[in-house]
View 1 (spheres, rainbow, N blue to C red):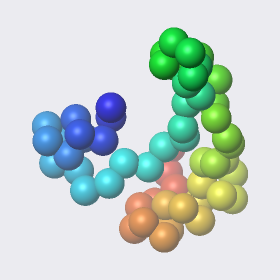
View 2 (tube, rainbow, N blue to C red; view 1 turned 60 degrees about the vertical axis):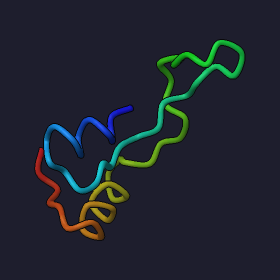
View 3 (cartoon, rainbow, N blue to C red; view 1 turned 45 degrees about the vertical axis):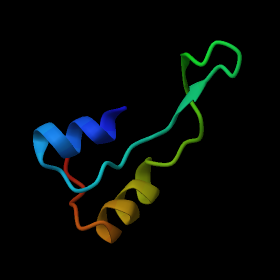
Length: 56
């Protein structure tokens, strides 16, 4: 949902973020993080790989 918006309206090439859990029955976001992927050292490494910085 975010990626098409970023690409079309903001001109971004990529979207890097944490995946939100979706209830399989209702297909609605639960608000829980599916897996922790962008924290501490992992976040810095991911941003380096994709050409970003680790500020903020």
